[in-house]
Amino acid sequence: MLGEDPRARTNVNRIVPPNAHEYALINNPLYHALITRFFEKTGVPIVLNMSLNENEPIVRTHAEAISCFLRTDMDALVLGPPLIDRQRADFPAAYRKRVEA
Image (cartoon, rainbow, N blue to C red; front, top):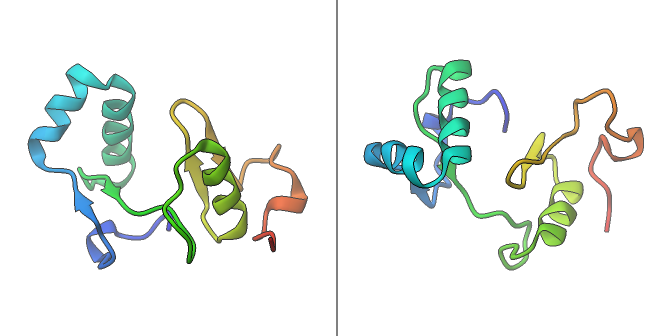
């Protein structure tokens, strides 16, 4: 989760290869900005791509991703430009902890 050293993760589907950063700069500036900001904050120049699911098929839609986020202990969820962060002051208090389905 947020704050962990991602190099310690073992349940990793794919690690972004070094040349992906250059590819993202040209083809996906938003993703490039995410990688860059993550490096600035953590000193780790990678972003891990993990399956987003909780004992169910991998999510396919924004609605499924939000549902999964609310039922787990994830700290934040990025859906393109929107960032959903449980720690923000304006995040509804009822959803700060995992919500049972």
